[in-house]
Image 1: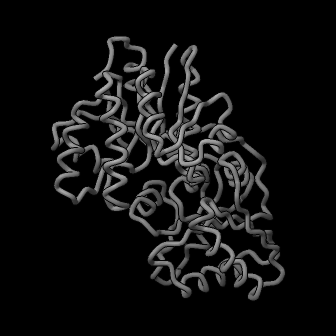
Image 2 (image 1 turned 45 degrees about the vertical axis):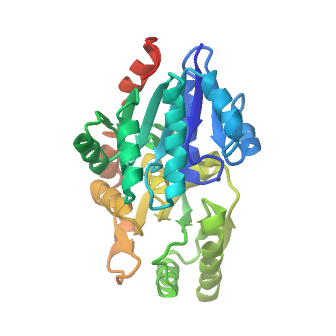
Length: 344
């Protein structure tokens, strides 16, 4: 029997992080007698979604210490937790969880994270020292891998864990187009207008599902987009889809023929589902993903060219061959958990 404590950006109902949590929980359940506790901003939500999983509140330090003390393994990840762009406090918080695991003599795993940027000198020093004493470190991008090497931290470079998800092979609905939007600093009314006009020009008469993957960030921009589409092309039947579970989001993307998406993990689900995909470049990681898989990508500031034509005429089989090469490697993870030699 193994007891696990999971630390990450969980309970905020953000699709990418919840999907990663789902992958991690499914994996941990393969270990006989596993007991899982998730540190979450919304423990009741987490316990309702992931059956037979315990959950404790993000800032209940007493509960966190109690659970870590009775655990065997503390897992931090995935996503980009160890950075101070979001805030210095969040960096210190996630480092504290890792350090508490080390202090208690537990195995500590850094799971498929992106490391940095860390601009605060003290935060940088703490991160370097703490990571050097983890039982196992894995990262999801080459930049993080190279950075850790300069710090003297051994790490495995892996693909994003979402690539290990099993996506249902539904028959595609050729009459449904999914647009997934999120707000960001470079989002402009001009871009929304241009995107809406292109969708209307290419998909008149179709059903348009506009996905909000984290309502606190996405819902308003989704409603704005829907309003413009309705004015431009009344023949398009629009629906804003919000407050969805990870499974519901994956099922919707899997069934749709066409996906126009901003979020990194929504695009990965589209790749696994063999949908026709158009990426919206709001972040360098999306641009890199689109380039790797040779899918069209539009920019928030640049005029559209032939991207919608490329979306409609995609060579899905060719793209799928690249997708099939992405296999998440669990060997290092399995080795640490199965090795009963104790903590870091």
